[in-house]
Picture 1: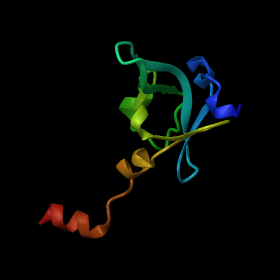
Picture 2: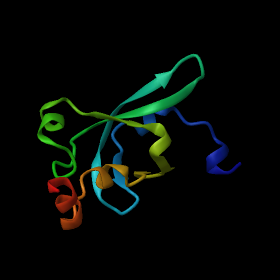
Picture 3: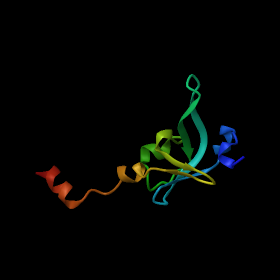
Picture 4: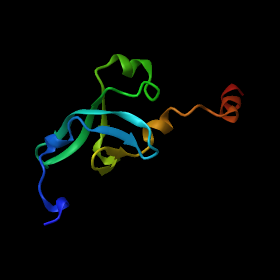
Length: 101
């Protein structure tokens, strides 16, 4: 029986580091958000956040919840889409000019 077909407890996700698909550290899993009616994970509650990715308001909070649909792979670490990185990319000069116009 291969490893993927063996049922694992969801608590094995707690404590795993989360990285974007570009290799940037996002945070660490502290807890899970579950939909008990559908028997599925809907989100990962992260703490120990990468301060470069999140604004000051988020940093003063206990953590963030990342939608589980962002998860691309689960292994020794968890890989998620780079959505968080894209949310905080600096605006280009063209964007700034358009806003000022």
